Image (cartoon, rainbow, N blue to C red):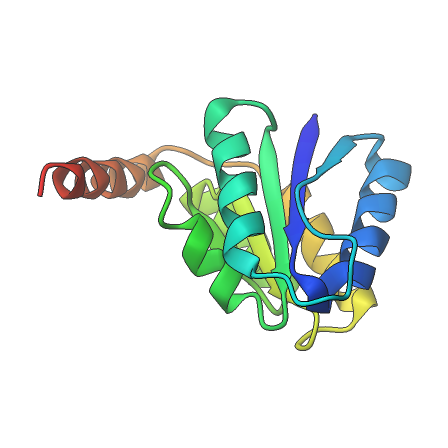
Length: 151
């Protein structure tokens, strides 16, 4: 599996630690779309890059990190086909995979500690989409995206 990861200047350290964590624990390839500098870097650049990589199939899933996780997730969700969830705890991360088939995860480097961030990543990566009754809602999301394209 390939995971795209992106970040702004606030989350360089978190990005590096999460990248290493995923590579060592899961053996997944993690592709960096974020900055490695602590100089100001606008999160929309990284958020869109990871989202585009997910949609194109360059990576299987994406993880994005900024100060709160909110801004970078908003960017990702502007890309049709992306379902990015911002999580500050593992339970929502797990259910977002099981019920919403999220393909991107966001969290905030200023919101959660690194060990909690690892727990969130674990819950999200280990969650599996249940389909069934949940597919109706995923189809509705897709319909909304299609209608918005035509406006």
